[in-house]
Structure formats: structure tokens, C-alpha cells
Length: 422
Figure 1 (cartoon, one colour):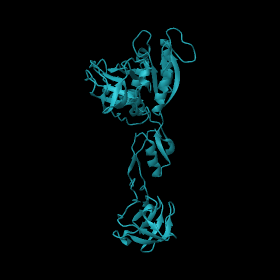
Figure 2: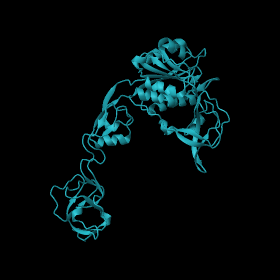
Figure 3: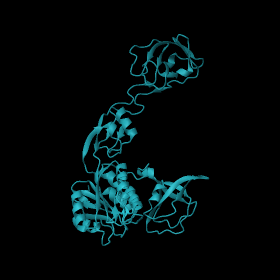
Figure 4: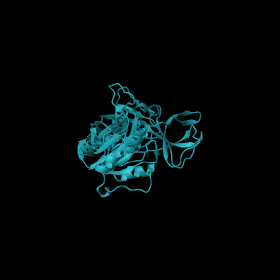
């Protein structure tokens, strides 16, 4: 939802908002929908956590053997010559030794098993010499005191932070929570997105194209991009180029969904009704960004629902959703937005001249060059060329102040993996 205190238009004094400003606006002025639920930790991957989670007790809760071997006390051990010990017990994981071993003895111990209090060192089984009956063990010389033992609390001390509010949980975070004894946790419910395509020229596969029509590639791509964020969606079909219908459908969607997304119809042509309808029944907070591709993207609200109007061309839709839709859904879903990492990579291409009033996101592929990784630009920049997305593994990001690129220059590369696309 839009922050209640920020329901006024997000006015700015520029015809087109810069990329950094657009992301900042989306993140700062969007709030979580606020709905929470308790779910099993095992089902929480990709969800955003509500509360601070700390370790209620040390992990591990006891000293334990890091290897299969033999445990003994270094006070009974001669590091110069080695020492022979009587093997008096066998200790396995989950089966602690309840009696105190006699002075000068050792125990056979397995990985994860509790180390008896009297002992402080474990020698690996590969390094010892045993008598045929296994009752006597010869530890070699040169062993260091304390080796091969995991200390209590070595992984998590009691009270250590495991997850912070708004953090997106990863599989490794679930392992940490489970190791600390958590069975269920409170997470924000996943946002629900209502998804429209628009335009009389757009049709769904399954019927032959008439002259001037195109198949709706966005209807397959956008759901996959939405689900990659952890959100869910409902396909609401295609909005025709009819103002009355557009108005009715958007009003209905605003009653049900956290976010309403349209693709196409974001310009001010005579048949593009979405902009004018949004101005009538909702609020338009952002329109026109200084980005290529994706300039006519919109952001606003319809009642309590957030609205996002994407361009129609598939490449522009892909770029705008990853750059702006992901942070928007992160905030709606209760998450804290973390700016994706860029990498400096050598350009294997040149651009003699680039406009300096906008930021450009070119499709590129990171490949091996003779002296390390280089990035190659897809040769064509058209925003309808889906092939450019298929052959790329990231964006070449050219900031507003970049006026040209020469082969060998360092450029910013934003891998798709940093944007949730494997």
C-alpha cells in the first residue's frame, strides 16, 4: 500500500525522473500490506520475516567431536613421543557418556558426539595405531591441544541475531532457525498481483493472428517474473482500447489486489486510456523516467492498491519490472530493499555516442576474454527484440554521465542473477 501520509502526488520538478530517484521514490513511499501469518520454518524460503529472531540457547549446545576418532585429555598426552591410551568407552552422536573416564584413558568417539568433560582433544581415527583387539590406542606425537572439537555456541551464541525484520529468508537462514529450535515463524503474507495486458492488437496464443496483431509475450513473461519475487498473481486478461471498459476493470481490480500491473497503454496516444483513467479514479505519482528502454513507466495508486503501468514492448517490460517492480513488491511484501550489486567489467564493444540525459540498460553477455571476463553487447537495441533477452545474462548499465564507450573501457554490469533471474 501507499504510505497514508504520502497520498499526495509525488511531485518533482523534472519532465523525466532519473533512475536512482525513481527507485528511491518507490522504496521510500511504499509500505507493506501488513498482513502476517505463522508458517513452518521449512516453508519460509523467500518470505520476509516480521520479527527479530535470536538464538534462545547456544548452537551447538554442547562440545562435540568434529571428526570420527578418539578423545582424550592433553594432560595425559606426551606431544614429543606420543601416548598409548586404554579405550574405555564408545560415544556416538545422541548418546553422551554419563560416567567419568579414568585418568589416562580415551574414548572412541564419532562426529557430532558430546565430548566428555574431562577430555579436550580428539585425534582422527586415520592418525592412530590400534591393537588388534581395539582396546588400546597409540596417539602420534605432535598433536595440538583442542583439535577437532566444536565448542558450545561456536555457530551461534545465546542471543545472537539470526534474522532481522524485513529480511528475505534463504535456505541457509532456514537451517540456522531450525538449528536454534524454531518450528514456526511469523512472516508477511505474499503480495497478490492483478495482471492486465492492454491493446486491441494484442491476442493470446491459440488463435491465428490477423494482420496487425501480435501475440502477448508479456502474458507469459510477467507471471514468471512476479513469481520469482515470491509474490502471486492473477491473470486478468487483456484490456481493450475502450475507456469505459478500462475504467471498470481497474476499479474492480483495485478492490482485490495489493498491486495492479498493466503492460502497454502507458503513453498518451488517443487509444492509450490507462494514463487518463488513472488520473480520474486514482493518483499518478510517477510517469516518464529518464531510462532506455522503459521511459513511459507509471506508478500510482487505485484506492488502497498500488498501481504500476509498464510499457508494452517485452524488453522494456523486462527492464522496468526487474529495476522497479522488484523493489516495489519487496516493500509490499514486508521486505527491506537491498540494491543489487554491480560489477566493473571490460567492454568488448564500443558506442561512439550516447545521450547524457538518460540511463541506458543494454542487454549483454558476460564471456571469457583473453585476459579475463569481458561483456559483449547484443548488436541491436530494439525494445521488442526478445532475442536480446534470451542471449543476455545481464544488463550493461550506462549512467547518465556516460557519453561514449570504447572497447576496453570498464563498464557497470548488472547480472540477471542479482535481480532474481537464474
